[in-house]
Image (cartoon, rainbow, N blue to C red; front, side, top):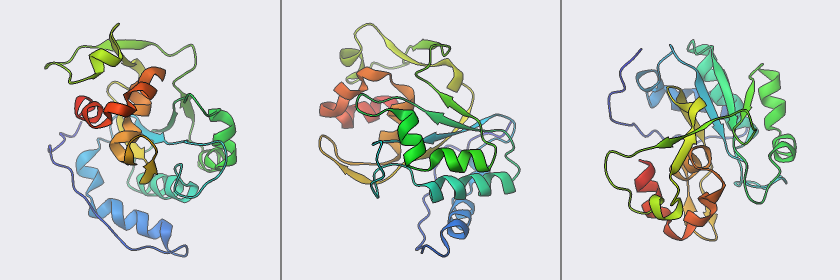
Length: 198
């Protein structure tokens, strides 16, 4: 198992519809994805579905998912898993079809996990330091999906405006996979919530 170096690396490239898949490959290699993700464990692809209907810059895009899958597979990541959570406003299965996520994961033979299904156990997370706000939003304890423990997670967010949080990105996408449905109530304290999740 590789050791995570403890520092993330940001890479930015200009892309076009004609080159987006190749650009995602180049971007992930510039960000040194192999230094951050072990090939010895399952790599989860945290797919973001914000709406059941296709709106640009709202949910993970099919080309984003495809580019990441192709790059990871070319680098030897053979155990990939799509990860979906539910939301208070969206039927995930409808959104997965309408946003063409299911088409892409099926094309590459990537199974998907739906964290809201009954078979998934949620275990209590006990922080090493006190939370800023999560213990107030979740007074009965903060629970995370046991199935995610020990896996690599690649977030497939969008950078979008949000009525409650102003702007969101990768860390905001993380809370969809880590926190259960009450996460909707963290929007008014989103900055503190993201610090708690880090």
